[in-house]
Length: 548
Image (tube, rainbow, N blue to C red; front, side, top):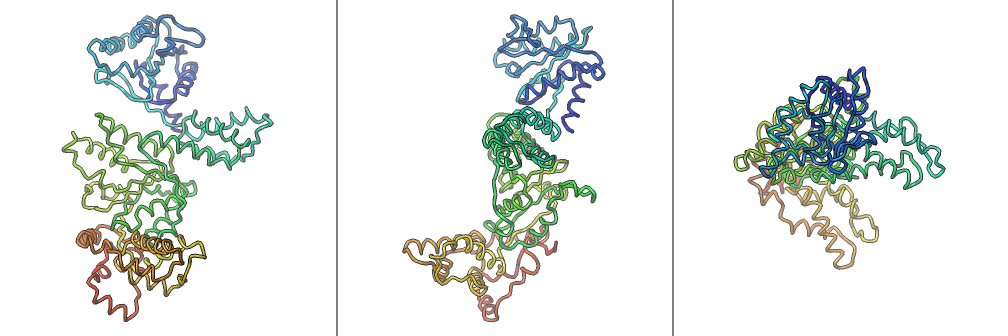
């Protein structure tokens, strides 16, 4: 019911005779309709008012009436000052005059400041409402103008729009409409985050594309939503078909996620539990952190939005902060949703000393939102170097849990090999002596002690290239050779991995289940491992052992 609250808020501002209101939105028509409804509701507004519109192209208009010679902003303001009737003036895109570049352009700001008292002291109530897609407010007017943010249409407004479109087109012989009340609700929930115009376009496109409107047209609504998110230039809509089973190991993390599935739905209300805030996944690079984020989206069936911190920071003063606010608003508009921030330490590791405090302000905005957010936006943040993150981000209340993803255990490596071999070896004509039995998987896993998941996948791909280059079947010997030729990250970055583990031992929960952390190997293999110089990667695993 957010839009109704906004409407009531604007109504109170008009009744209290606030001289100037600034509504930042793309939806001019929606604002105009809202103000016109308020202006004629005498029981709400107390005094019925006439609504005037102004634009650079048409000047001042009221319905079919138009006032001559009012396209210039000063002429329009003069008319408003002299108007002697209860009225509301909606000025479209007036923000272009609120950012003067030359001294002679300040006259418009001075005129607006003069008009504040004129509007307040007028015998008849008068208000000015600026409507613009961007907030541009000079310092001189900040104490005189009240800023209102118009939320995206809520589910009730979208349902009303859908009912109107169905009523208009139900007699059309070229369109078949087959939607139950439950399906209508689902369609409208999918459209959350679109403006009314965008939602109308998406529904209209669904009708004409297949000559029908049914639950099967959800993909068209989602495509329109992807377009909207792309246009922000900050968030990326990630389409993922991964399953949680495609992530090898990490059973502790998986169980935690499964227990929180559907916790944002109505059936969770009887337990009086809040929607989960988010999870921070840290650990060794290449061990499946980003893959897990994509799998969560598929399992929970929620849109996955990737936040690129590089796009948040912009060269214009103040625009970086606005970019962060826009990203947050978009994520909330399409909620319930998942906001994925990959390698978060690269965006929030600075202290703002060299950028005029921009990164500090952006970090503060994000922290406050994480703490206070009420809409179901689940934040999945991944980090390779956790030591670079500020301590404020790691305390309880920001994330529900911090998980540490270590080098995969023997059982996990077996599962990772199984996943990638099934994924790649789909054509039976190229499979040689690889049977994917437990013994084979165990042998491959034993050969890859200290390998991360990405390196295991790469070894399978390298073996396939060997077979492809010689136009033959792939064999176990190809896999063994590819493994032997690869130098794992656990050797090249041994010191860094040890440091990450020491941090995780007391500050994070192990993503690997307790039963998987105890590797089962034969006595002969155990002796071999003891002699292996990399054996410390088996016995000093990081992360507290907590079973979910």
